[in-house]
Image (cartoon, rainbow, N blue to C red; front, top):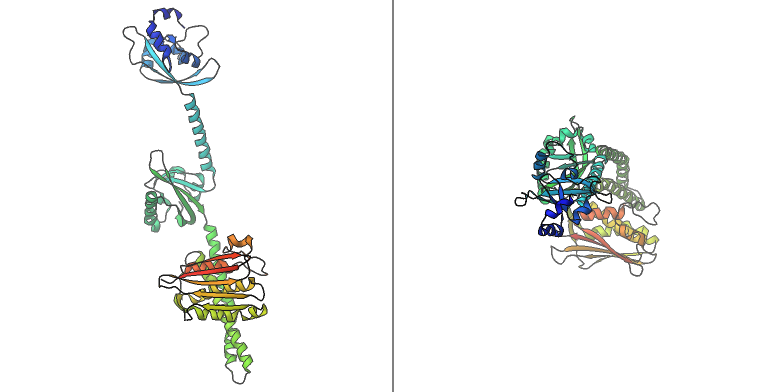
Length: 469
């Protein structure tokens, strides 16, 4: 550097530059760096053959208009990529004093090393690039809408789903992909979601650019944008084919139920006719009655299979009537008579009030729920043991009715956590794993629930809780 200039600097100014807590240098009106402190020297490798100037530092070279260029340099701050004495690249930010020091035409430059910030920003940009690549390549349709419902970003899968290009969607309101009949409803749901932030998940009919209708499964989360406003990220999956398959399955099951009911109806009519004929033995009359009753139960179970499907979808409407629960339980005990006798099991109903117990619900569903649970108890109980079905009526109208079914068998540990799940069964030949699953569905459809306690010493107690209020 221009060492001959050092003697012209006052000792005070030299000391100030040296002691500054930041990298700093002193520069004359020609842009020559006259003095620099150690912090600055550690950041910058000086030229080998000449004094360092601000033009060298900023890699501007020399020109006839250097003075004009120098004035421009002084007027603003600058970001410079430099190399230090160790050969490492550094990102420097340089700013200058607003005016020369007194009348000496000397300027102070302050240098800030922003290498770490640049590295962090570069990492963030790389992360953003990766996120954008993931966003665009995921097979799940994704979009981001602002608080007013206008598209800000859409990925390729979303565009393929609806048949639009990104340019046709970005800046447009999301209801462009909603059928006219649903626009107001979904716009209102979007506004409520932005306000409340509750996650949305559901199936919706949407409209492609060509006018065709799709069924999608949509989910959403609320995020906060860089401007502090709420935005909605929506995930969309095309389930049109799945819904078609479900409708086809439902149609086939309905046809099957119809085809089974026709011959079953004939059998039931014949049994009903036969038991009324004069002169037939009483034992035969009783058996014809049993055939008729069995056919009726099969009819009811065929109807129930449709009900379970609707309960799974949350679309079932109860056919509520007055049900005498004690009579229903007596009927179940009678129906299980052959099984209990074969295994020498004592199946008893215990009613704490010894009075008729009326509950308002759907009789067929309640029969199915209690029959499944009691039959499970009979099958799980060791032979020769006692099974009790305790009916505990509510003390007040707004309390819960409890039906407790106890047997000496314990539920295997492996299925306890999933006891009420669909298709869970253990050790049963021909078991479907639908008994406890459908029982829980029925209890919930009546506003109740089922719980159990089990261990090897005390056996198992299944408790049905039904609201009476």
